[in-house]
Amino acid sequence: MVAVLQTEGLTKHFGAFKAVQDLNLDVQEGDLYGFLGPNGSGKTTSMRMMLRLIRPTAGRVTMFGEDVRDDFIGIMERVGALVELPAYYPYLSAVQNLEILRLISGDVPVSRIAGVLDDVGLGARMHDRVGTYSQGMRQRLGIAMALLAKPRLVFLDEPTNGLDPQGITHIRGMIQELNRRDGVTFVISSHLLHEVELTCTRIGMIKQGKMIVQDKLDAIIARTVNGLHIVCDPRAKAVALLRGRDGIREVREEEGRLRVICDASKFGEINAHLVVNGVTVSELTPARQTLEEYFLSQ
Amino acid sequence: MMVRVHRLIRAEFLKLSAQPFLKVCLLVLIVITLSFEIGLPLARGQKETVWRSYNSVMLFAYGFQSGLKVATYVLLIFSSMIFAGEFDRGTIKNLLTRPITRLDFFVAKCLTVTGLAVFLFGFVFFVASAWALWRGDLGPVWDDGSYLIQRGAAEITQHARKAVLMSFLSFLAAGFLGILVSNLTESSGYAVAIGLVVFLAGDLATGMMADRAKEKVFLFYAPYALEKLTQLGEGTTTRWNPDIDAQHLYVFVPTAYMAAFIPLAFGLFRTRNITA
Image 1 (cartoon, rainbow over the protein chains, first blue to last red):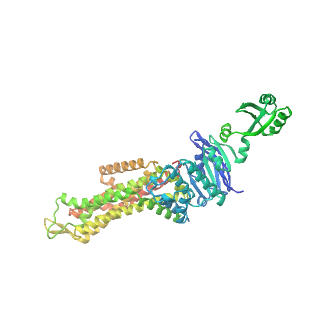
Image 2 (cartoon, each protein chain N blue to C red; image 1 turned 90 degrees about the horizontal axis):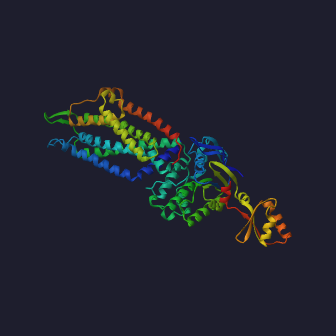
Image 3 (cartoon, each protein chain N blue to C red; image 1 turned 45 degrees about the vertical axis):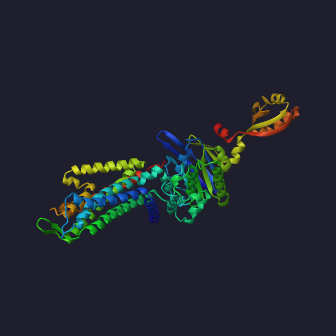
C-alpha cells in the first residue's frame, strides 16, 4: 500500500487555544478514511491545514509522497475537496458554477460537468440558478465540485449534511463505487459515527485536537467487543459462579440474559466453567459497544 | 503561471458577466451620461443657432465627466467585493483548493479589476462620444459674443484626447484602492462600505487641499482633467497646469498609489487563514 496522505506533528494554535495538537494522520491508497470527532474537535481545521487553507503552527503534510509546500499545484491536480459547507455563486447555474472550477482545474473536458452532475443526481436541475436549490441539492453540488476533476484523493467534510435518507444512501453508494471501481481514496470527516461505520474502511478519531485512535474499521470493531451476552439456566447460579471470578469485571442481568464484561480471551473459559457446573448455556454471543460508546470511553 | 492566470481571468469574467448588478450599473451609467449631455446645456442656458450647434467635445465632457464619476463608484464597489465576496460566500476555499497558487489568484483578480476598469471606462467613453458626435458638431469652439473661433477643431480634439488619457490611471487607481480594501475584511458589505467611505473622505480632503498638495493625490487627476476639458469645450479661457504636464504627474502619482496598494493587498491576502 502507498501512503496517499500523511501528516506529521500537525499542530494549530489560535492564540492560547490549541485547536489541533501533534496530529499524525496516515491514509493509504484506496482507503475510505473516516475522520471522526465531535463538533469542535479540530477535524475541519485539520483538513484546512492539509489543503493549505490555514497555515499550521507546526508539522508537515505530505500527499502522494510529496510535501504539499514543495509541489502544491502538482498535488492539487489530483485532489478534490468539499470543506465544511458547500460554497457557490447563487446567481449562476450548477453548470456555470462548475464551469468556473473547470476553467481553473486544468485539463477537464466540458463534458465532465454534465457527467458529474448526473452522478450526484442533479442532472435534471443543472441549468437552474443554484440560489433556488434546496440544502440537499447544494450539498450534492458541493460533492460534484469536489469530484469534478476526477481526483485521486477526495476530502469530504460532513458530506451527508442536509441530505435526506435516500440522498445519504445515494452519496454513500457513489463514494463506495468510486473507491471500488476507480480506486479513489476518500477522507471523510464526520461526527456521525454510524454513517462512517457504514461507509469507511479505516478510521481516525480525534478528540480535543488530538488523535486518539487510528486503525482499520475491522480492528476498531474488534476492540469494541467487551464481553458476552449469555442466555442460560439457571441464571442465578450462573451469576454466582461468575461474580468475582478472575478476569470478569462485571456480571449483570438484563433483558432475560446475562451481560458479562470481560476480555475476549475469557469467553471459552466462561462457557466451560458454566457447563461443567451444571448451567445450561443455550446462547453465547459477543457483546460489543457501539462505536459511539467506544469513542466516548476513549 | 500565465496559463493559470489566463484561466482564472476567464472564470472571473464569467462571474462578472453574469452579475445582475453589473447590468444595472451599466444601465445607470447610460442614463447618467446621457442625462448630463442632454440636461447640462439646457440648464446652463446654452443655445444652438442656425449656424452653430453644440460643440461635440463640450457635450462629451459633460457626459464623460459625470459618467466617469459614477463609473468610479461602480469600479470601487466591484473591486471592494472582488476578494471579500469570495470570503463572504465561502467560494474562496473552492478556488484555493484547485491547482493554483495564491499569487496566481491575486494577479488574476488584479488583472480582472484592470479589465473591468478598461471596460467601464470604454463603455462611458463610447456612450458619451456616441451621443456627442450624433447630437453635436465636432468643429471649432466659438466665442458667441464676438463670433470668433476660440479653439480650432483639431486643438479641442487634442485637448479631449489628453483629458481622457489623463483621467484613466486615476480611475484605475480607485479600482486598486478597492482591491486593498477588499483584503481588509471578509465581509463584502463592510468592504464596500469602507471603500466608499475612504474614497469619499479622500475626495473631500483633496478638495480642501492647496493646489500643490492636491497634485500628490491620485483622486485629483480625473476630475481635474475632465473639468479642464469642460472649460475648454465651453470656451472659457483656461490652460492646463504646466507642472502636471511637465512632470507627467497624472501618470506617476496614480501609478505610485497603485504600486503601494498592490503589495500591501497581496501581503494581507497571502498571510490570511481561509476559515470561510
